[in-house]
Length: 217
Image (cartoon, rainbow, N blue to C red):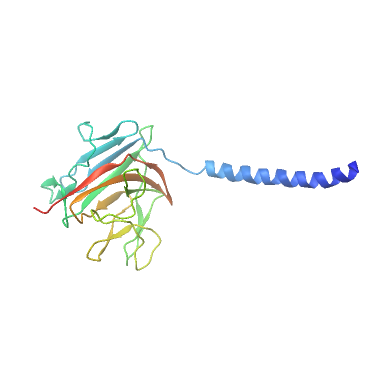
């Protein structure tokens, strides 16, 4: 009876050890996957009047370029290099470089590797910049009429949800690997959160900050 039990038990034990080794190997490969932990984010306008307009630091929150605490996103539209003006309903979009920094001060590398000829979808480096609209609890906001949102895959085909649809039906790119665009649609406010995107998920997020779109003058 004991010999029978041992004969049946040993193969089962070997099988379970094999499963454990496989699981350990999978976990090890996941631990080896590159991961960035952004502790600082700088937002800079793109254009002749280029300037850092907002900074986020983990544990401190949002600040303007002078280090003053802010809870609303500053003017962000670089107009002909003459000035940085507010987002206005139906007006010019904001184009902003987003830089992420690790706790050791090193900048997370991100760039456009390629771009399609038809939809202009970009192939980004492993890490890239994105944002999302959030609700009062910090959860994903599915829709808003303040800015062009949500992000979507181009209707003519593609793989990456880098685009959004304007109220007139136009499709515009909002995620550009190392920079982003805000397209103002209607007067109002929406909370947004910048994201360090890693292939198909966010490695890190900033605190939300209020983005305001003003009425047309």
